[in-house]
Figure 1 (cartoon, rainbow, N blue to C red):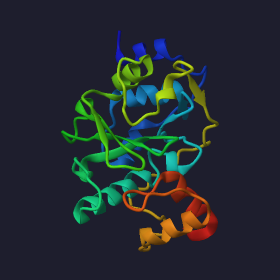
Figure 2 (cartoon, rainbow, N blue to C red; figure 1 turned 90 degrees about the horizontal axis):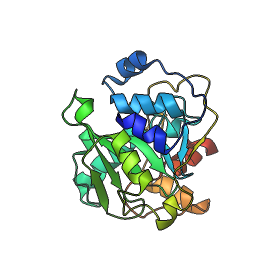
Figure 3 (cartoon, rainbow, N blue to C red; figure 1 turned 180 degrees about the horizontal axis):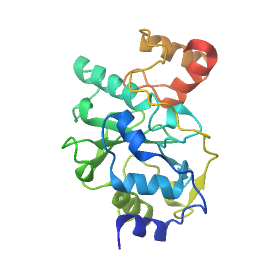
Figure 4 (cartoon, one colour; figure 1 turned 30 degrees about the vertical axis):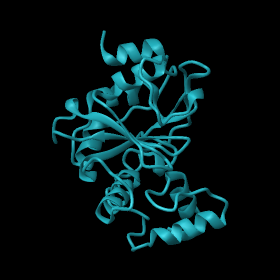
Length: 229
């Protein structure tokens, strides 16, 4: 039984999901993607596991949860700044971190993209939404999801109630076309924006944001929708 077989047996996917042109997506990203991720994305489409864990998807309804949107480059740039300035511990080289998931609490899931060009060997990392802790899993995405959703693997960053209702997947309406590939750190205008300005805006609008470290994707999305992008 393959990794995707074990995952779908544990957590059944929805009856239909949008198809993705993976060769074009990978060509635009400039890198191949793990086979198990493509199988998961094709089987489940955009949505959330246990109404908590969202995998980034080319057909995600918002570009801040899109695999091809600004999130991966933006978070990588924030982590590089944290590492260079020493304001927040980053145990991995940010150049090798690719965001491919986000939780409702604001944790990010990453691929550790080493060795480059060998996505079948990439492993998983996650970091705490409002703290310094990191978590690492020494396997691929399908095995990670199966282990976590079955309760065999505990992610200390996730709440104790994560599996209170068992393993299930809730789909969201997909975007009709994939988000165009955007590999430049955002805000999307390309202009230089001081993260402290975004934090000040967020607090003024009732968002709880950390005083240092990365800015949650939901805040970046709301900041942009308010006309700041």
